[in-house]
Image (spheres, one colour):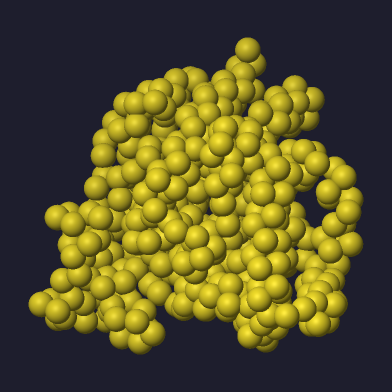
Length: 482
């Protein structure tokens, strides 16, 4: 084992993408995480600043609210907007010169490394801005499952939005002679077939979606390239992200969320339960990989003097509020995430062992990490404990890649029309405001606002706005939303 003592504290993020707090805290099938919790600071009411990956990471990395970052708060489901490239080779989520926590720590003498299994979080999208070294693990780990498919669609991947636009227009023109009922059935059939083909291609039915490869690359780095500097290491592990490893006859279950959100497929308790169970299998696997990653970090000397932060960028819905997955309205299942902060000295976790129950924002980790790197505190504290209003901002959906095609064909296909309507509905802006036990969801006039006492109504089923409008108005003013 390599042993290195440093004055500056190494800072390590293990971000478990798409993991909600309720499936971590108290889950005894996660022995590695539960062991860490016993000697950690646990923030039991941590709120993600956005409802999907790019928004939350951009906010965390810059310390700014989502709506103050134009690259991630623009309308991706709009005829006038260039939608998100589904293969992430053309889309940018931060400006080229963004001053991120990685660049700030570099100026403090840190060497920063990003290991990412998420295509949103890569060298292409600028979310890797400021990192000295980026491992785009998603390319290696996910594309490898079916190289033939990747080769066939490479023109669409590399061509980005313009290539998809051309493909959509040609497809629409070629199918124009088809009678509406036949075209309608064909569209639904092809959409379901695409859902299954994607699942077969990208490793959906495997537990591992890059965590093992990440651990190998990390080991190689410490053995061959380690430079002796204090490190900021950010690891995104995507195993808990949809799609999910359904087994046996359950492999036939559709995992395209918009077929459910539009009402074309029924999101009943059985379907939602099976998807949730498969998600929990992935989290259990992630727990094992967290243990292995910590072993690798320890062997590399990173835990001699370190703060390790385990968290997520957003949660997941499995039927709650009639929703599935994420990038939807900010109910707690979608935005309440785990946050476990472990202080290491001489390779061992040293505490403090405490639970912080007041609402905190993932965004405030930006300042807290900078304080750690600057030596202003010994462990995660300070900025996370302020009494300010905590926001989670839903600025629109992320799945806008087919907007143009849906708009073209929605008069020819009732199914395309239903999906277009559902995407348009959830593309509306909504902001959750937390203050103490109260939570307000503000829809900016598009829908009726909702107010919940989350201490007595944690599942957000009883909207008490009618009798407490003065509370809601005070929260709107306090959060500068009035």
